[in-house]
Length: 391
Image (cartoon, rainbow, N blue to C red; front, top):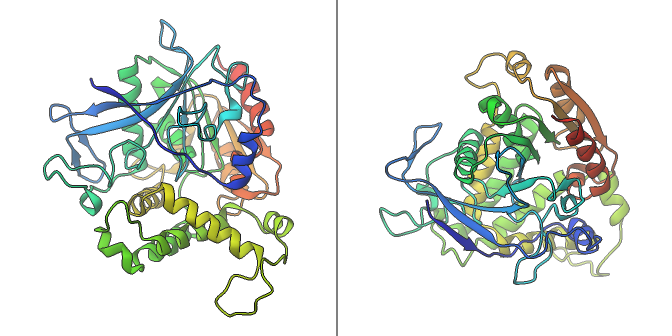
């Protein structure tokens, strides 16, 4: 087993970053580093759901708190589409705290005095885990579009191998929102003997036509950019226009009309009436979000991860969804967001109806899907109370 360290910049939406940067510094996990472990080798390759094979898989992860002697006090936190393993603390380079920092640390909802909290970058990511930007050991060049197609199930298999390497016997809980919530539900179905509870947030049991359509438009934005070069662009020269437009499309689905109206309304940045110039604050905001993503993310990775999300169907190959979910016998805290237009509450209510040991908690927020990355106090109280009830 090989272990090494990795550093990277982590960016996020302005409101969430502001909340993290202004959070109470007490209870911080302090300085952290991202480690990397190899979980697949030529002797133990990763066999992918759609038939691909990876002989080398490295996983970037961070761990906060100490694993106990029995290996049963770990909590796995799963990130969303453009997230990373950096969920808490601050790296030595001094960037803002991890994306769920207000929830992870001594005395916080995910109390590192009691739990070992683990977060890993998903298979196919671009923050240290093997993916399209990684070097193909057979060619010495980046995989780019030669990387094999992978699914949420493959992501979970990589995570399972990681916790085995770390000595985890059972997970106290698996927690995550959005694409992270997909991983949570897959864990419950795939590895029920390795966990004692789940917290899926702002997600349903399969990707809807609405969500698939939004991802498809975002992918077309990327692949229509001449700078994409059929995926062969230099890694240091992202297709900025396409990837930025993909992010703008996504940001509109991550928020609600109420949130955007309250934040921007019809405020202008310019009195110009030039047809192609940005006149309104909302236009400037969407451009800003696109620039930020281009600085930190990879376009081909975006294509692969959104495809994995679209392929997500918990019941595929397993029978009827009702039977699949009724077979999940661990306690579940299902969380939805009143204003979520991407994964509406009725999707979480379906989970509540079919999971035998589920309870429901709503995040009351005008901020839409992104509320689980903004409304930290609401999420914290629900998660803390739920974990107290898990044996």
